[in-house]
Length: 326
Ligand SMILES: [Zn+2]
Image 1 (cartoon, rainbow, N blue to C red):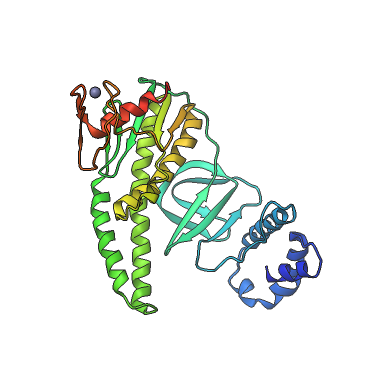
Image 2: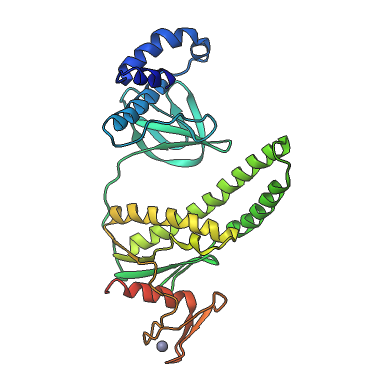
């Protein structure tokens, strides 16, 4: 990378082939550890490909000058088996050069041509792409409105409620304790470093629990409904809500939307995102009257005009489902 930078400053347009040649002839022979540890050639190959692509984007004016990758932040590398399909599935995966590794969760039985290994906190992750057939959706209720909450994961206009898993609530409490303890450690101390890792690991655990329950929710939505209406929650971070559970719910919203977008494609559903100013919780789902204000503590919606009484989240979800016709 540094070599590339100096070539560029001297008026050359470097490409990955020149650089790879340079690496193999000059650098590699000096770096004994690369040979000793038997570092897979494929790993450096992908690093060159990615760096080459980054420079291509830069020369075409599509992106800025490539940045140095900091070791320790989002460490990852990509490997393949020279284009041959690699069998995946179960809880063990055979990687080229590295050999058998065990995975925490079972992977889908399929084949892939390349995979990426990454590290978050001190845990290793494996990611790969594979093809799936499109499945027709079987809808009972055509349209569904979804109210995403903090207390419950989601309330649907059909009356179905997806609660937050117990493990999630329990781990949120632990996360609060850990983040408080971390804040009290002296800066630069080894204890602070230790608590940082502990906190990062627990954070990943909590967001994995949430991710998992979001998959159950988005599977249900896409398999049972043709049109899904959700609220745009991407601005709630601006509402000065510093509660931890809320901030995690906010992060979860991006994950929720991401899952919905690709699953809607897979199942052939339509996703409607109601604009952020639509007052779904203030409108009466029976007569359409709009309340001036509604505090967060009011869990039941009582209409001032027609007296309609309904669970607050369900009322909001029904209003959202009607946006499909608007
Ligand atoms: Zn009403």
